[in-house]
Length: 420
Ligand SMILES: *Cc1c(COP(=O)(O)O)cnc(C)c1O
Image 1 (cartoon, rainbow, N blue to C red):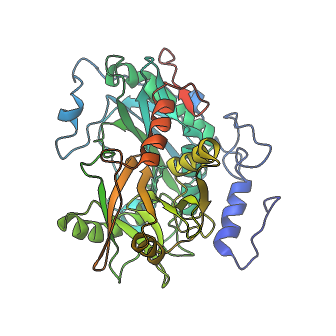
Image 2 (tube, protein in one colour):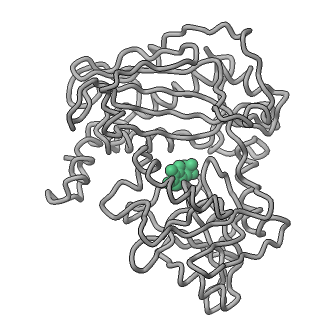
Image 3 (cartoon, helix red, strand yellow):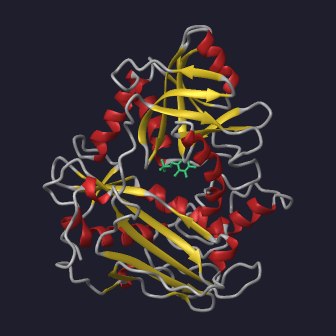
C-alpha cells in the first residue's frame, strides 16, 4: 500500500492504482528516478534510456518539407527516426532502440486491437528565437503517461527514462527537422504504449510496446474569428465520474468522433462537453476550457473545471495557465477551479458579464473561443484584441515566450542537440 493511501478497499480502481504507483520509485516521495529502478515488484530490467541502441536511417533520402506542405495531406509526416521499447512479463523491458521511422508489426490478435490497451501523450518541441530547442514541462507529460499506462494495466516505467528517450530522439532529429533557420516553429512528439500480446481474451497484456515519434502538426491556435463550440448532444457524454476521462487512453477519443463530426458539419470546431443533469462545462474537444467573466458582485474571474472528480484531463497547458494567471494577474483576475454550468455561462451572457473564453491544450495551444451554441441559444464572446480576448492574448504571449526562449524560465527544458 502507498504510504499516504486514502482509498478504501471498496475503491477498487484507486486501490489498484495506489498499489502500482507505490511500486514506481519515481512517483513515491523519495524517488530519485535514476534509471536503475526495477519495474514493479519483480527484479526484472526497468526501462533504461542509457541502454539505447542506435540504428541510423540514411538521412539524405528525405528532405524536410515546408510546414504548409507537411500539413496539407492526409498523412502525418514524421521525422527520420522513432524510438521503440519492448516489455514482456517475465523479462521486463528490453533495451530501447532508436531506428528509422517505419511500420510496426502486430499480430491480428494483439491486445490493443481488441481491448483498447493503448495510451499516449502529446507534447511539442519548439525551435526558439534564441536558436535553442526546447520542450515545455516534459516531466508532467512523462508522469501523466505513467498514470495512463497503469490505468489500463500496461507496464510501469520510470518517467525520467521516458523523458530521456524523448531527448535522445530530438537530439538526433531536431537539428535537421526543426532547423535553426525556422525559429518559431515546432514539431509534435507522440509517445504511445500499446498491449501487443497476441492472445484473445480480456486480460492484462503480458507484452507491450512503447514507441515515440516526432512529426509535423498543423497550427490550430488562431482560427479566423475564433473557435466556435457546440455543446454535446443530449444523449452523448465524453467521460463520467468513475470512468477514465482523466487518463489519456485511446478509448476516450474514438467514441467522441461521432459528435465532433456532426458539429463540424454545422460549422463548429469542437464539442463543449457538458456533464450531468446540472450540465457542468468540462472540456472543449481534447482541450481544457476557460471562461473569463465578471461575478454578480463585479469581480473578474478566470474559471475552469476542477480536477478532483477525475472527469477531465489534467492538462499541462491548463495547469500552466492557472499557475501563470495566479502569479502574474493576482489582484486583477481571480483564478477559480470549480464546477460551473452552461446555465451560469448563459446567465452571465444575458447579464453582459462575459469577458472572454479560450481552449487550452498542447495541440490547440491557447485558442480563443468566439461562440458556444447550446441547444438553440448562442453565447457570443467579445473579441476585443482582433480575433482574441485581452487575457487570452496576454496569457498566450507569456506561454509563447517561455516555449520559444524569449523568456528564460524553468518550464522551458533545453535539448542538448550535440548529445547522441
Ligand atoms: C491532451 C488533452 C488535453 C490537453 O492537455 P495538455 O497537456 O495541455 O496538452 C485536454 N483534454 C483532453 C481530453 C486531452 O486529451
